[in-house]
Length: 202
Image 1 (cartoon, rainbow, N blue to C red):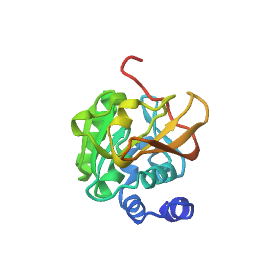
Image 2 (cartoon, rainbow, N blue to C red; image 1 turned 90 degrees about the vertical axis):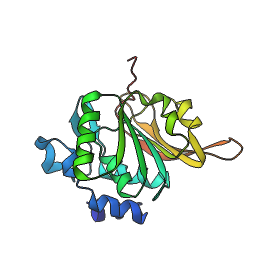
Image 3 (cartoon, one colour; image 1 turned 60 degrees about the vertical axis):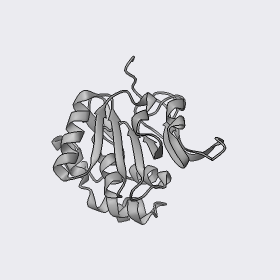
Image 4 (cartoon, rainbow, N blue to C red; image 1 turned 60 degrees about the horizontal axis):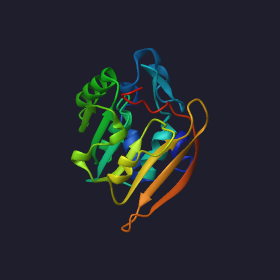
């Protein structure tokens, strides 16, 4: 998977590549689709949610620019696979999932496999102020705008990697950074298609 789908494209971060070689992706997908776990497309994980295609996981992980010892917030735990990749890179991972069943399942899978990540069942729109600031924030569902609380919880020179766009249409992956003066810079990483960002109020 890594050589043919990820390294052969534009993913070059050694920590990302090694993490994706070692994390057993098949353990994060339902049994009925486990034979497709390493194919380069998203797979359903129940409750209308998906596990992102391997290339997108690699792209987002690399765009964060994080490494061992960095504190990362993930919004949208889903299967727990992205959190496992970040944990395998040596990051201190905090991850939020709004669907209780997915939060519980991801926490159990991560624990069983020995990946250290703090999982909470909560609405991720407001981030996790208790543990801020973060060295990176990654959002794995698409809102139609940038949640301001997430920007405010970024540390200096940290990155927010997030897909933004309308439900059911092609969205844009963005990498935002905030400098010491509070200025926000955005980088367009290309078109993507993610499930919509779910809020507690619907």
